[in-house]
Each structure stands twice: as C-alpha cells, then as structure tokens.
Image 1: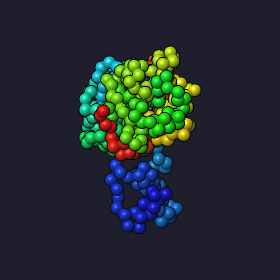
Image 2: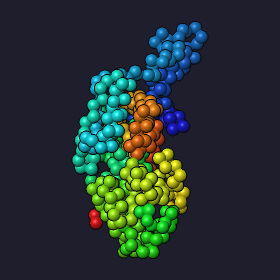
Image 3: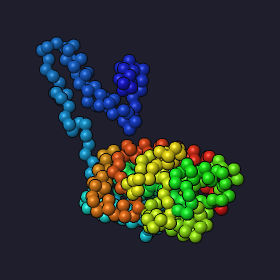
Length: 368
C-alpha cells in the first residue's frame, strides 16, 4: 500500500519523483506504462466519443515493457576462496566450480586468496563489479570477524547472499573415559569443578573456539582452554588425556567415536545432523545459545541483479541435488544443503547477531 500512498501524493503535487534506481517497482510500472494510459483515458473521456484512441498509446502493455533480458554469463566466472589450496574448504569450492562450469557453460576459475582471516578475499568481492562474474566462497567465520577486528566491508550491506551449500555441524565431544552422558551432566560437572576439566580448540576465533568459551563463560575461575594446531591435534590431546572436551566437526572425531575413545553428547544448530541422527541438539538438551551454525556458501557483490542471483542459486541447487556431490560432502563430514538467497540472507542477519552476543558475553576469543 505504500506505493498507492506515494501515487496519491504525486497526483496531488505533494511528492517529488524518485530516481528509478530507488523507485518502488509498482510505482515505476504506474509512471512508465499505466500513467500514460490513465492520462489518455482522461483525454478520451473529455473529448467525447468521436475521437479515436491516440496512436502513440498501446491498447495493452506488452511483456517487453516490463522485462529487460540479462545476458549471463558472458565470460568466465571467478570464484574467490579465502582458503589455501588443499583442505576441505578448497576441495568443496573446486567441486562446486567444476559442476557450475558445466551448468553455466563458461569456465569457473577458483582464485585462492588466503590471509587476514578471510577479509582479503572478502574485500576483493565487495569491490568487484556487480555483474555476477566475481563470486565469493566463504564460511560462517565471516560473521565473526567483524567482532574481532575492523574489516573493510559490511557483511550485510556490501554482499548479496546467493546460497549456502553445506553446513558443518559442531559436536560437543568428550573423553569417553568420563562418566557424563548428556550435555547437562557435563556442564554440571564443569561448574562444580572447573579446574578438573579443559576444552580444546583447533583455531582461535573459530566457531568451535567461541562455543567452547561460551559454554563456560559464567564458570568462576574459568576452565582451561587448550589451542592446538587444527582439530586433528585436538583429538590427539584428548586421547592423551590432556583435553577433556571440544566442539569439533564430525570428520575429525568419527573414527575415535566409533572405536569408543570419544563420546558425542550434543550438536550445535537448530536441527539434528544426519551425520549422527541419534545425537540430540544442545537446544533439545536444554542448553540454549548454540543455534548459529558453521556453513559454507556462495556470495555475490552487493547490487547484483536479482535475475543473475536467481540463476546462480538455481544452478547451485541443481549441483546440490547431484548424488555424487552429496556423497562427497558427507564423506568430508559436511551436511549438504539446498538453499535459497532469501533463506541465506535471513540466516546471515540472525546469526550475525548471535555471534556478536557470544563475543560480548565471552569477551572475544582468548589465547591460553
């Protein structure tokens, strides 16, 4: 109804015309198509039945009056990846690039830009042309980074979400020699004797690191936090008895869980993971604050035309429907996801708030 009010104000001479770039679509339609017809109707009625319809005014608007076809893609697409070559994130990016190239009919080149916590790659895409030919493959840490240090872009303002392709659920994992069987039992034991337990993390400032700190942020005197070089090193520390628990990806712990050396107590996110469907979410277990997930997704520069975003999202959905792609992601400990630009945008807005709350409550990631 806002467009109706604006049109009414224009008719009374109480509003100024807006630039087409910011004018509501409904108002543009009125001014460019129906407004001339409206005026012509007035002239026709005022002039009497003897006058013919003005030749310059079409009887009905044609489809060409509403749409402008967009040619996309017209050259190779560059997929900027803020991770070094090798490793799971790079492998997922290259898998997507390979499949997208087939579907889009142009090469999709992976451009690795590691460094600065992913902000180097993000800055390249934020400043790129909004024509869909430069895309960013990133993870949920891009929502955390602005709370740790200044970044040269605004995550919400300077990007257009296209689609998430996978989530990486983080499991609350403990040493199986400990007697706890539920997240509540674990947290009660930690609160009762914080010096007797410890958390491990493979990367400072990562979701697993922040969740470990958040789990014990209210515990008097704190709980020791051990930072190792990657989750594989955290697992080795747990097997050696030097670390009691971690928030880890399934791929890092599944072998030791199956052998009985480690135990899964809960999983982050809003739904159970198909990687371990019998493990309840922390929310199910009565532990709140762990809804933000770890994900991988494709993002375009701000102001990328909707038609281009929709085309890329549609092709990504097709890629994620392929059995081989889903199997390869599951084998890497990831949960395949078929997403939409709208759902991704909603997740970015809500999870950005969740991570900033966690950062404020924990005081940010701390080094041991």
